[in-house]
Image (cartoon, rainbow, N blue to C red; front, side):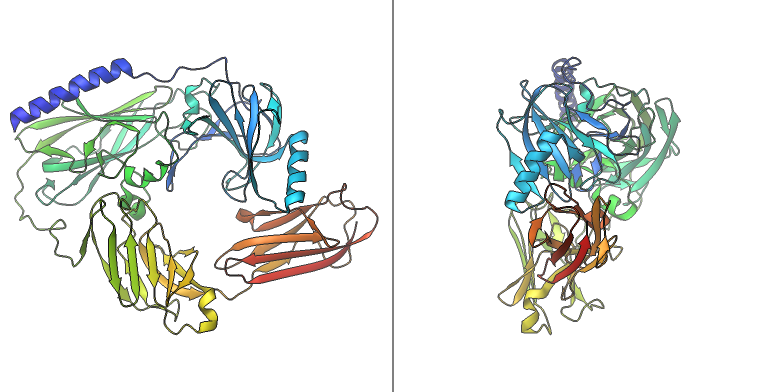
Length: 579
C-alpha cells in the first residue's frame, strides 16, 4: 500500500508540474473589448457563480439601480442573433466578432432605433411577442462603441442590470469575462467560510462517527484557520469547502475562480473556472454537496467527484471514494482559493488518523428496503399505480432507489407518491407515470402532476393523459401527486376601465395570474387587429405600449386581451377607450 501511494504521489507531482508550465490564464485582450457601459463597473454576479441548476455564464454589471443606460458594442462585428423571451435574458442580442468570439447582452430595456424598428415589424408580421432570430452579417454590422440598446430589467432579472457574456462563436461556450481586462476593481481575497468532512463508505469515520462534520473557518487578509482543530479520521474521506468572492464596491456574494486542495503538499484537486459548455452546466448539482444544499441552503464545492459528473472544470480530482487515511500519522491539509484577479486565500489544518472504537454499522449497509439503480443503465420501477423510467446516465452515481406511498391531503385524484428523496440530484429528466383515482373522464385533459419540495412548495409539470396514467418528465425526485387545473386565469386591469380617456397615457397595464399551470399564451387586439402586448411573468404583468404609428389619435378604440393557461383554461377582457 505504501509503495502504491508513493507511486501515485509521484505521478500527481509530475502531472501537476507539467500542468503549471502549460496552463496559463487566457491572455487579457485589453485593447480588443471596451466596456459595454459608460459608468463605473461594479458586479452583482460573476462568471461561474453557483446558481440553482447551473453555473452563471456571464458577469452581471450593476446599472446604479436604474434602467435606461446606454449599452455599447464591446467590439466591431455584426448582430448575429436577437432573442426576446418572457424569462431568461428577456430582451437580448448577440454580436459576433472577427476574433472568433461573441458577446451577449441580456435583460435589455429597448434596442437601438434601427433594431427596434426591424424587430417590431417582425413581431407584427408574425403576431408574436417572443422571438429568436439568427441574422446575416450584412444585416446589422456594428462598430466598436456603437450604442446598441438601453439597459433594463427584462426576463428573469431580479433587478436592473446588464448581463454580459463572452462566448466562443464556434461552440457558444461561455468564457470568463473577468479575464479580459475590463476596468473592474478587485483587491479583496476570497472568503473561506467552512469545510465539510465526511466518510464515503461504512469502513470510514470522522471523529469516531459516520456523519458529516462541518467546521467553520475564521481569518482575514487571505489567511484562514479552522475554529476547531480536533479532527480524527479513518478510512476513505471526502471533503468540501464553502467559499465565496467579493469585489470592490459591492456587497454581492460572487463565485470562485479556482480551488486547489493539497494533502502533505501534494495537490489532489484543482478546479478552475475559465470556460464551460451549456451542455454540462446542470452538473453543478453534482459539483456541490447537493444534499447539504437542500437541507441547509449552504453550497459546498466537493473534492470527491461523482462518476457521472463530466464537468470539464477539473484539472484533476479525487473519485467518489475520496482520500484514504489509514496509516497512523498526521496529515497537513491545505486549501488554496483564488479569484479571477489572483487574489488568494488559504486554509490550513491538520488531520490525525485514529482507528475507530465504534461498531461499523450504518448508512452504507443496505438495511433500507430499496432497488439498486445504476447510473450506467436504464432503470425501471413499477407498481400498480406508478411507473418510473430513469434513462441511461440519468444519475450522477449509483443509488439504492426508495419508494413509498402515503395519503394525500392536497388532492383526491391520487395517493402521495414518495419517489426516492429530494436530497439526490438527477442528471437527466426521467419518465414518471401515475395512475389517477376518482378522476372523471371529462377531467383527463385537465390533470397535472405536482411535486412538493421539502418546504411543501409546488412544482407543476407539463402533464398529459397516457393510456390510463398521467405522465410527465420531472428533473427532480420528491413527493408527487395528481391534481386538476380547471380554473381560468385572472385578468385585472390596472390603468384602464371601460370608456376611459387615455389621452396622454404611454401604456396600458393588466395584472394576470394563474394558480397552477401558469400563463401559456396571450393575444391582444386593438380595434380588431392584433397588437403587440408584452408579458412579464416575474411581475404578473401584461403591457401594451400605445403605438401612435398604428393607432389613430383622437378617436374611440376597442381593446381585447385573451390569455390561456397550460391546461387550455381561458380568460378574456374587453374595454372601450379614448385616445
